Length: 154
Image 1 (cartoon, helix red, strand yellow):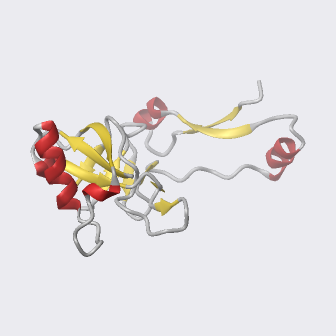
Image 2 (tube, rainbow, N blue to C red):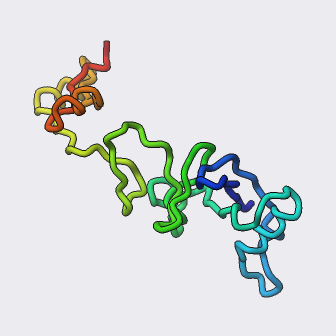
Image 3 (cartoon, rainbow, N blue to C red):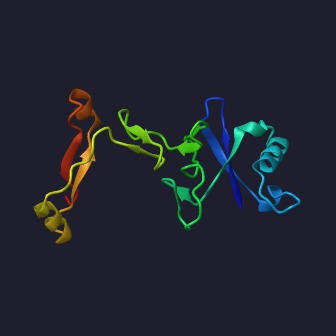
């Protein structure tokens, strides 16, 4: 199956549709995105250039089955198409986070601290579940902070 994202004039994904592979393969057996785009324009009355092929098996710029990653992430409703970088971006989790082009993921503006050996030992023993959680409000007040240590165990 081939997957195509329908994008609006602001490059926001409205929906993702599937096509049978026969709709995108030319006479020589080669996949052609334009064939799918033209098919979708004809059948859904949406401009061909607003249908962008996406890979169901690509996430964080890694192909889940070991193949070649395609367009950073599988598109989802509300994602944004980045034409310049050929990446589908999920919505940013926080206002301050920035795009990492190589991983096709949003990253915090400051690095996440490492757990101490004691915290990791408690996690391993399953007596605690220490993790750093992003606090956008704290970062907005002081851009040298943002990560807060939390026990997710309870």
